Image (cartoon, rainbow, N blue to C red; front, side, top):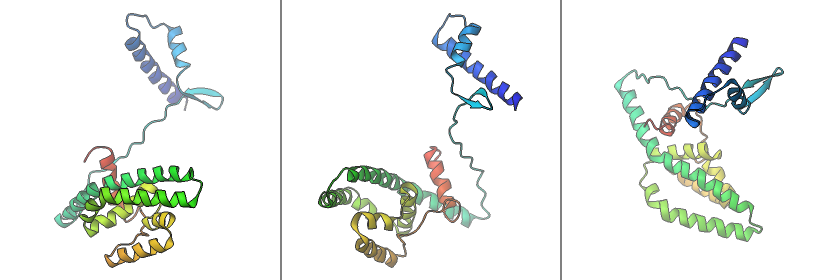
Length: 207
């Protein structure tokens, strides 16, 4: 543990020295300057000792994909195409829900809330209805899953919360006719693991 702390301190000394030379050219970096800069580095108290501490960005490691046959390869590439097509709409759904929840919290009457929800519904339908109608049944199912990923709620729960249980039941019945389920939960570690992997690749800018 002591060796690891020394390594962290040495690494930060190098970073501080590099920053000092870059920001203050032609100025000698003395021990006092280094110590002064070290004191402003993020640190934590560990067993009575202050040690450098820096939160690192999450790294998602994806192993090289292996396919047992061409059929599985084609299935994965088709899934990748579908996810890339619908993922932006799922992200937008998450952003819109956060915006609507914030607005609704500041409304005092149920009448005001209902009018706002109806107005937002018309705006969203006007803007995205054509795009959504062009989606395939498979893309619709994936979108339902990704909405749950982005909002933390199933599409059924969102409709029920905003429009009431009757509307949720109605749209669930329609979805069932087309083989979909608005109550579908997102399972990134189970049946939706491939979707999660593709989404991560999109978020990291690899595809």
